[in-house]
Length: 120
Image (cartoon, rainbow, N blue to C red; front, top):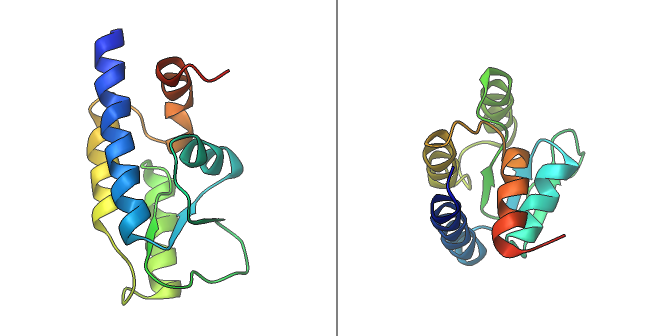
């Protein structure tokens, strides 16, 4: 991926995060590295990792990996927490954006984000 592609990729991610900060109270991710990436992108609300005993409070979205295992986890979480407060659009948008570049996990964008945002 060329630098200008990386730049627009990260810009698109930042726009998604900005919208999520306005519309979502909680994000559920698979692991701590996913959580760190979302923080680096500027997500300010609560982030829960899979396996936590805490239930999402308010509107939430699920950003588990986009491989088969991540999809299964997302489906289990949907059943566990119900869909009343689930905002599905962000999972779909993240998947569409990441899949354009062959990325299947939130953690997988970390190096690109750091390169473009000059985080070390």
